Every structure is written in structure tokens, then in C-alpha cells.
Image (tube, rainbow, N blue to C red):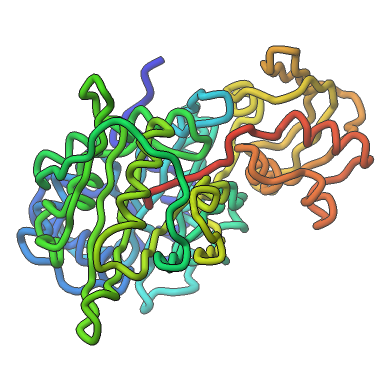
Length: 434
């Protein structure tokens, strides 16, 4: 079913009134207007500690993110082209969920508040306004990636996707994986933009937590976006199968060690693999690269097969952190969008202080993994906070773990049954920021 264009939706009236009472103007920003776009990008860059944008970088920002809804908060009265004191942008995208399915989600990005306007209720008004707008448009899930992890729990978001950052000592780790057929080729940076988009679009559907990408992101990775630092050091390798189809792509950059030219560092910017052969071939290329002693790879799955392909897995070190945050807005639609791993028939209550997901339902999952949720007046057998539901939604967090943390109520037997149902055979992952 066609999804709404976030740019066409009206501003939330409640947040509009709340900000007006505090002396602020809340309005949509016209990304096609050069002066407005320049002021918005300057505010967002400042919020993320970036430098002043060049005209080229502003043009890239407008072209890459013009499909999004840009919202600003301004000191009132604000003239056209004024610099906002707070920013947020959003759009309707697709999030992959268990069962190789997808769900429409309200993606939120670029959240900033000027240090000169803190603690005036601006962030609360913006974020709650985004959630009310998404819910009114019928979008069942919201999501974001965050710079500060302490902010978003109060709005019902929870970390549902954790990722691993790898450090690999190539000499110690060594390669012990299989030989592969197929072919590796370097790809020029301009051509790589399309290859990245094509492979990512196929790969992301099989992994819960992944979201649909956009050309501007692939231009950044490939180093062809205007303003990219050290673009000439970015290299791209594609893996093709026997039929000549691209089944994997690697984007990397090497940093030289001036004290020892055989101990350079290879940073994996992106590694996408549709098949086992592509995965093995690309990682072998990385680990056995000439004159490289250390490899760094970010935003990898916590269930990465890589250690099993190494001769000595103690040559790898992983740091796990939160990355993809989820907020449930419509419980029946969100849960019925995903597949479950075991039958279950349980009455669940969801507690949501903001009211979007509050309610009691009978959750019935059949042998095929399809769920039905029916509102009921029955006493709940399990109670979840909306944050707990968001955390377990993609199958990477156990309800029994959250029960010990006081976020889930119910008997051990009921929670164990829900654990079996919510579990995903594929660990959630998210390989990009958005």
C-alpha cells in the first residue's frame, strides 16, 4: 500500500502551541529555498559539532535529503532564512522485520537543539510532535539511530539492534575459510554508487533491523559526495558470481603507518554480501590484503560468521554497542507485520505513558508464524512497557532478560513462551546510520 509523503503532512498542533507559548516558532523548512536550506544545514552541522558547510556541501545536502521533511524551531518572530535553534528531519521508510518481511516506519534524524536554548522543552515538543504525526498517518513503528543514548527512552524508544565493532590483527587471525569461485574486481567510485544500492536493497530484506537506503548515503560511502574528505583514498571491490551478477561489495580505506609500511590499517566502510561465497571472498580480500596489519570494521552483526573463518579468533576483538532504536506506535499492525518463530496464545498488556501503544490484546500465533492481535478485556498474562516491546520487536532481545530488569511482568512460563515466539533466526543488524 502506498505510504504517505512526510513532507505533505501538517505540523502537530499540540507541539506548535506548546512551542508558541515558550516564544518559539515551529515550522516546516522549504529545502528547495537556498537561504532556508543554508540556515537549516548550518544549524544541524553546529548541533553535531561540524564545521561551516561550503556551498558545495549545502547543495549535496539538499539533493541527497530533499525527500525528507525538514522541521525547524526558531526564535519568534523568525524571518525567512533565519537560522533555527533546533532541527529534526523525518521520512517514511521501510524496516526489515523477522520473516524477511518489512514494515513502514517513521524514520527520525538530525535532532539538534542549540546549546543556547537547552531545557526549554524544545526536544520534547519536536519528538512528541513527530510521534503524533506518524501515528495520525497510520505508521506503526518509529525508529532512529542516536548520538546520545540517554535521551530517547523517555519517548518510548528502546535499543532493538546492537552491533559489533571489530578490530582484527590480520597476522594473528589468519584465514581459515573456504576457497570461493566467482570474481573480485575493483570498481570506480562513480559506478560503485549503483552497485551499493543494488546489493544493499537485496541484502537488507533478509536482516531484521536493516532499513532502505538512499542514493545520498551510497554517494557518501563511495566518496563521490561533494565535500568528502580524502575521497581519493577510498577503494571499492565488487564480487560477481559465475553469471556475472554482483553479489557483494566492499568499500574500504587504508591509512598508512609512516613508521612501518607493512603495518597499515584498513578500515571497512561497508561490506555487503548476498551469498556465503561473496561474504567469504570479500573478507578474505580484507584479511589477506598486502601490507595491512590491522583491520577495523564498524556496525557489524553481533552474530557475524567472521570468527569462524579465522585461524585464530583471538586475533579479533569486538565491542558491542546499541545502534538501532525502535518505538512501537500501533501494536497490532507492528506485530502482525513480522513473523514469529513458535506458536503462542497469550494475553498481553502494553503500558505506554504517551498513550500510543497502551492496551490489552490476545496475541495468537499459528504454526505458520503469523500473528493475530485481538483487543480484549481479559486479565493480561504478561505486561510489557512500550520500551520493552520495542526492544524485543526485532527478535534480538529476550523478554526473560527484560523481566529480570523489571520491564516485563508475567510468570516465567508465560515469558518463556513469548521468548520462543519472538526469537528471530537471524540476528538483527543495521549497517548504516540514518
